[in-house]
Image 1 (spheres, rainbow, N blue to C red):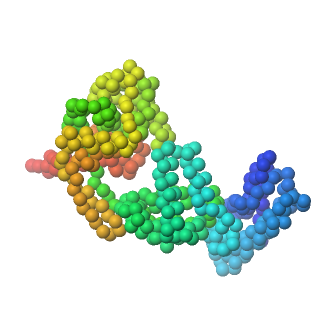
Image 2 (spheres, rainbow, N blue to C red):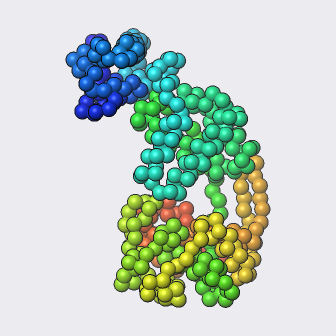
Length: 404
């Protein structure tokens, strides 16, 4: 039976030009494709599924629709002739292989801008900035290395050259490369689901990564910071905010926007921007000490600078606290390993607080489910990335169990 192809309007009640969609059914599955052609509904002949006579651009648009319908039917005929599995993906891949298919009209970076707008509406500013950085890297890659960059040229060669470019021109190590590729796959999946591309080769891209050692502060070290004498409000504010994160497990971004009304009855109830969920956090005596000395419950606020300044000041505080123990950091760039040692204060950042909170509770014997309820983690996999099992604790546990 010949494949039946239909053309429908995205919004038949629109007062402005609306997209013309190609629709057909394969194995009881409905396939919809944006043709990138638009027309006002009053100029559309619903019965003939073509632009009405007398409408501007009628001949050109109808000609494009005729060509597309024939291409789809040709793919169907050839596929059945060779016994191909007639899936939606088969049609998408085959359509993408035709050089002058309508999808080549879609500009890669124009779609990326639409994705950024989507993120601005649905995600946190941090996520938007992350993907804006990815876009900037891709534009630079296109201008300097890969001028043919488009949806049609996303393949393994693109993958390999983009990774090499990031590693050599931006000094990215494997874990950073993996994040770029993972984010790129997220964008491509978004574009694919919305029919901006039919190319699925990105799904096979590998994300380079390796396990890194997690650096945290012990509870004793956190309390040392808590009691440290500092001679400026600039450092005291950062210290108090950091310790508060170490005592509550809250993220830097959530503490920064904490309001007086969020704290009631020794609990914090906040909307977490990253997870899009409400979270209730229990306050403990040490966390309350931080709030009290900042007059938070009387309307005062924890004063926090930008993330970059926060980390800069935190390293300064760590140096004053004499956190000088050396820690080895191993990084991979491809198969090449670099190994360097740094004093603890140089490794301090806002991320260390949440990891320290989790690791200290684990060492004190708190069950994982109770810690996850406090931090808002929903999976063990993501939760484990924050745990630092320190050497002394591991040795003590082994000796405790394996002793006569």
